[in-house]
Image (cartoon, rainbow, N blue to C red; front, side, top):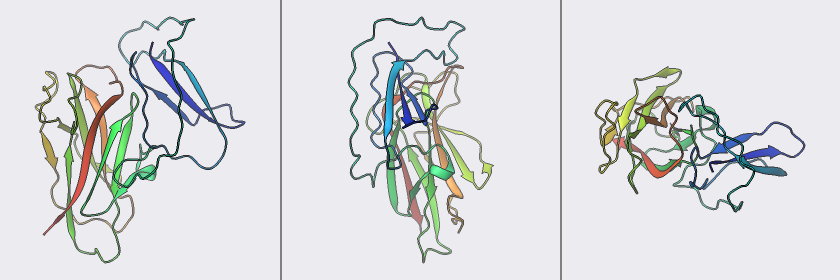
Length: 221
């Protein structure tokens, strides 16, 4: 069955995170998740969301598949995303000349990466370079959607697919690598960002996907 993991702070009734893979037989694997020091409760339960597939609600299973819950220190995360990063406020920061990889660990996951402008970088120019499925092919009919953000303004969405990916028939022809126009980063932190999510060729919400995306912030001469 499809499974969800809820994360609660000790003594609280509402979860701070709901992590569902979106389909059966798919492991939830979150390499790094930011939590404040404290005590937490993890609850594992059946995922009964419909994700736009139909009006049918999955029946409640009274016998669970076996599972293992493991929580440990994330270690070095310099080149890997840290969740939650679904908005500029919690975005991973990327310095000019560096790159970051990540993946969509649960259904509906959104990842945001923003420019971290170091001192002495005034008047320099950079550009985003986004690649998808850098380690394996994604599910058929699913592509990476990239939206460039400048402050509160959002550019039109761009579809990006890995080099071996089969284009989704109902989605405009995607590009294999997306490179933004060169720009001068704002001095305001978390103002220049890219927003990443999966998009399907139907009204459904794509499930979790272990394939990785890559975001680089290249310096422009």
